[in-house]
Length: 278
Ligand SMILES: [Zn+2]
Image 1 (tube, rainbow, N blue to C red):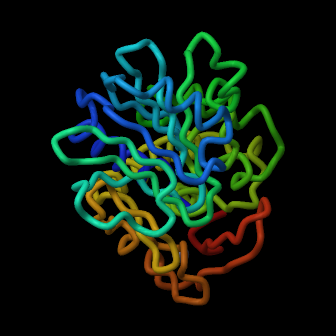
Image 2 (tube, rainbow, N blue to C red; image 1 turned 30 degrees about the horizontal axis):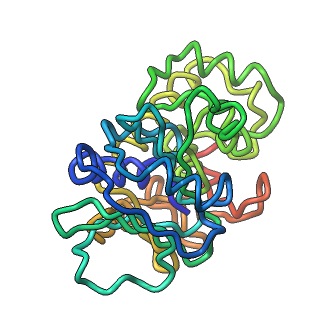
C-alpha cells in the first residue's frame, strides 16, 4: 500500500505534468471510485477547472483548483495515477479519466477499488473529507519537532508500532516505513510509547524524517505484489534499502548478530531485530 514516500513521488509528478492544465473532460467508469460524492458532482466540479498546485498531507493528494474547489485523490491499497497519451490503451481497472488537453489524460487506475477521487468545496471539508481534517502532523510538510514527538510519546501507553500507524498523530506512515523507522531509531515495535525517553526521543524524530526523506529520494518502494508506480509508470527503488521489512528470518544486516523477527503487532505483520531494537 502506498505510504508517504510513494504518494509524495506521485505528487511531484502531478506538480510537473498536471498543475496548470485545464480539465476539458471527465469520464467516470466505476462509480465506487467517486463514492464520497457522485459521478455527477465530480464531473460538474472538475469540468473546465485548472489545478493550481499539487499538495499532499499524509497519504492524501490534494490539488486546489482555480474554481476554489479541491481535488482529493487517495490511492489506498492499489490506486495509481498515470498521465498518458490519449491514444494509448487504458489499463484494465481505469475508473476515472481526466482529459487535460494536448492529447494527454490523467488516469486513475485501481484494481482493488478502495481508492478515491473526490472534488469538494474546502469550506465543506469537515463534512466531505473529515479524515483529511483529522490528520496529524506530516513529517515532511510540517516541521516535526522533538517536542512534538515527546508529547505524542507521553500521551499513550500503546506500543510504538501502533503509535506510528496512527494517522491522527503523524500522517503518512504505514507498515513498511513504520518498521524501517523503528529499526533506524533502535526501538522495539512492542515498546510502550510512554517508555521511550531521553536520547531515544530525538533519535526517533530523526528516524521518522530521514527514513521518509531517503525513500522519497529513491522514488518510494515498489514491491513485487503491489502496483505502486509514479505518474509515468516507473517504480521506486527504496525497497533495495529496506533493512527489516520483508526480511523476516534473515540475519540482520545492521548488527550482523540478530535474526529479523516477524510477528503481528498492532494488527500488522511487523519485522524487527531484537538485538538492534530494544
Ligand atoms: Zn540487528
